Length: 474
Image 1 (cartoon, rainbow, N blue to C red):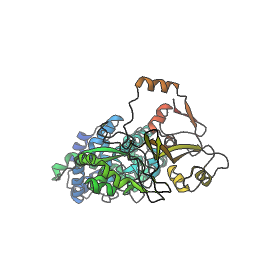
Image 2: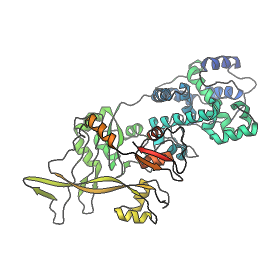
Image 3: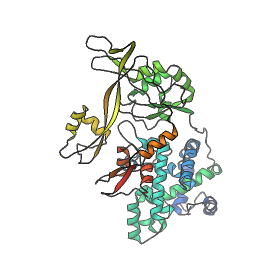
Image 4: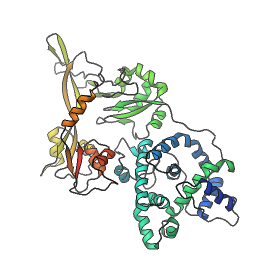
């Protein structure tokens, strides 16, 4: 993404006639005003003459991302022309990070991303995941429009924040973008004109001699679910998958591995290699999901407990029983009549409510985990916890299985009537909002989507207050 300029002035002899731009802006205008202004005129010429290569790149990337944007915008009832905004934000680069640490196609700051449900840790940053980031952008844009009731002001606040726009309105006593224009930060003054100019270029670029050379499209892909550690470089090497393609399909992965605590991660793999992957799944998954125990014995980690693109054909999920040795060097088998059994380690998720006097070190010692892991699982900075806080803990437990159970079976089909009965008999669970809680923190604590939490509690926007009682399950 090139560094776009601040506001520039049009020279005395603009190359593109003002009358022509005014006529074309009027033709393009739908829900969002495309106001002619000397700054929008300047940016049209900037994208034609100074940054023609950037404009061409945007034309080439449109087929890759615009179908996704259009579907999400339609779902939320938002103007379809908002799809051009991501070009100004990120240059349609899903992993770009700004100097201010905003990231992804829609340039979310870390805190704002978390507020709108985009998970971030050392290994995963969902600001870079196109579908989830676009969903979050739609929610944010809708919220901003509800605040101002004006799309130009909403776009300006997407760039600089609603607080800055409100301050500019108070200082200037203006009520529209153009009446507060002169008191906005310089970058924000150019933001709306850049959007107008990019909208124009994507519709009339051909008239100015700019054409895409090679359009980009989505790589056909299938999915597998990952639970536990996996070395992605080794996985690609043994599955004959180009690692760069895997990164392009999964831009939210920021490292070459996924850690032990990974749960239900949906990994996209190119369809052209999927048949080979399924045919050689045992050796491939063996090579990249193994880890060493203290005794030096290699133990296969569970790859998945859910079905993938192939459905219930048994190809995935893939699990290997642990091959644990005892002190004498014999395998840890037990006989039950004529049937042999084998012990397998699995990871169990438990929750713990912080009590008065608790410290992280004590909780970690109680459950046999490290303080570092406990902090990472619960997104805790430093060692601050508070009474009533719910902590998530992943604990290794052993279970005994028949020795013949090597490959995991798909989850059994649950009778819908039986499930409905179970749901009817499930008691409601509540959470009382504590100081510092956000919808994202609460949703992560209970394994919910923010949308689910808001729907159950009829919450509009993202505001909650301490003492508020939220329904977690019904």
